[in-house]
Amino acid sequence: MRYQRSSALFSEAKKYIPGGVNSPVRAFKAVGGDPIFIKEAKGAYLYDEDGNYYIDYIASWGPLILGHAHKPVLEAVIEKAKKGTSFGIPTEIETELAKLAVSMVPNIDKIRFVNSGTEACMSAVRLARGYTARDKIIKFAGCYHGHSDSFLIQAGSGAVTFGSPNSPGVTQGTAKDTLLANYNDLDGVKALVKANQGEIAAIIIEPVAGNMGCIIPTDEFIKGLRELCTKEGILLLFDEVMTGFRLGKGGAQEALGVDADIVMFGKVIGGGLPVGAFAARTEIMSHLAPEGPVYQAGTLSGNPLAMSAGLAMLTELNTKPETFISLAEKTEFLHKGIAEVLNEKGIAHQINRFGSMISVHFCDDPVVDFESSAKGNNDTFKNYFHGMLDQGIYLPPSAFESYFLNDAISYSDLAKTIEAVSKVF
Image 1 (tube, rainbow, N blue to C red):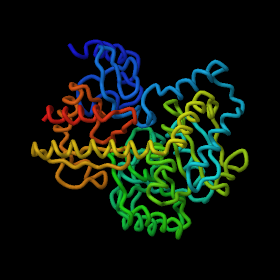
Image 2 (spheres, rainbow, N blue to C red; image 1 turned 90 degrees about the vertical axis):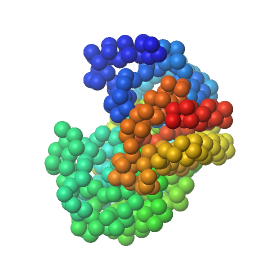
Image 3 (spheres, helix red, strand yellow; image 1 turned 135 degrees about the vertical axis):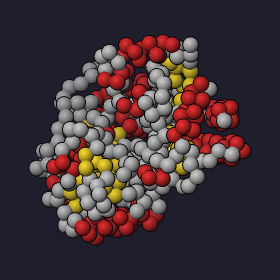
Image 4 (cartoon, rainbow, N blue to C red; image 1 turned 120 degrees about the horizontal axis):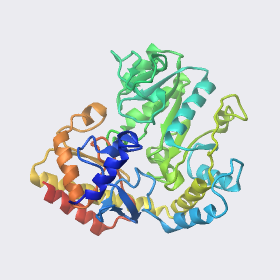
């Protein structure tokens, strides 16, 4: 049995961990079957507990942009760990990483490190509310900003109504301050702003979405949001937990040519260790404690191991900007190869791509928002996922997630992946 030990480990895990996993998508509920358990990874490859190996297209959901166990990152963490793993007291390396990040990203002066993308987004929204003295926010259906209560909201009864909780434990009081809009629908956002004039603190968005597949904003939409926010005194928040330091040195702001007011980071900025951050201009960040009244704190924030991994990762990306070109070219090669196979096989599909993010949707019409993404043929995706897994290709176990390429992937790996698609169909 190909996955015998993984299945046994999953059965054991379910006795002690809810659902057997520490993050729901890992449980394979969207695709069926039992998850594989990973023993180790190197470069572009994952190795499971049954001795199988896979070309990895999630890169730990984004952070391992240079590949697993990348030597400079690994060595930096090992050396730092020898000097202690956590102090809860300031260290020089926090400032070093902050200085480097600020130099790479446009339109930010100061940055605060936290421990996860969820924490970064939660804190950024609190800061936006404190800065504007307003309560409401607008988010977009299909965009994921972590599991903080404010973000677990589904659609209300109409375009100008507030949402309702889509998880038990989220109160109606929280939901009333979160307004839901559709991605790439600027008119819908304008209607929400008009119906809640002077009450909206922030619009929060994945500037290139990755949690309903890779969804690219139109120029009219993303630039229209910037103009609307400036006009109405609303802060524009870019959740760059996925896109930051992946779409380029300056992330999505640089790639799209649009400045946000607050930017949230995670993943790449920690080189594979738990980390998050949020950043903005000095006038906004000065409202944050201990300088200002908006409170945020964390015992492990600025952890030296995470800072050392992030510094090593960002240093390499900063000194080798050609990495982003290499990644984009590899992703384009994969896109063209998969499209050619699916066209030859007569399989209805849409492929979205931006930089080193890509997603395959089994549907006829363009995928531009959550509603169009949800129209994909889920049965086809399940067969595709498991077929690719059996061919040694690890894809996101959900039709609503972007792939993340790492630069350790070779063109022979890409060719093998394209050949696997042909075999599956």
